[in-house]
Amino acid sequence: MKKIVLIPTYNEKENIQAIISSVLSFESNYHVLVIDDGSPDGTANIVRAIMEVNPDRVFLECRSGKLGLGTAYIHGFKWALARNYDYIIEMDADFSHNPNDLDNLCTACDNGADVAVGSRYVKGGSTENWPIDRKIYSQGGSAYTRIITGMPVKDPTAGFVCYKSKVLSAINLDNIKFIGYAFQIEMKFASWRLGFKIKEVPIKFVDRKIGVSKMSKGIIKEAIVGVLSMQWLYLTGRFIKLIKAN
Image (cartoon, rainbow, N blue to C red; front, side, top):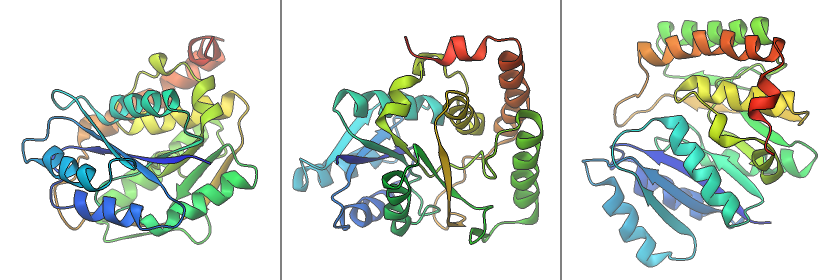
């Protein structure tokens, strides 16, 4: 079973060596692909140094400029599918996602899930070091998404996710249009509407301690409008036609 962890980066020099070392330490033999958006702080050079020691397990894709979280993951999905990985995992670079939960996500897929979501809002899940406004945005956004779409996922904006390759192969990735947190919702919505089984696995999400958060008002607005757009496309019969791979 080939497993790869996708880590998009922009100015993550403080975290990248530690997070890669942590992922590589597990007996499950995870591979790592860093998708770096031209970080001016030298993040990519740190990854290159790690690759010299781990050429068969650590990989780097560099892009010119800050192109957005969603497009970084789409790039990584296509890269991993072309190399026949079985489990493809999204993960942040800043330790807000605990590498110790990787095996739990993969186990959920071993036991029948097609998509395993590291969830803050199922029993056993939690957040740490979050200001009250962040909690309101996140929990309110999750409730809003469930109400509008009916999708039975309590943490639809979660970014710690394990996909079986068959799920990503079934989705027309070129038609995934959102780039911020709405991207996370769109991917889960597409997986669910295509009939794949989604399982939520409890995690503790710890707000980053080093570096700068990428959250912005534009990202929040995209998610609000994006949820309405996705559901409207589904109700009018266009969503599946757009999202299903040929």
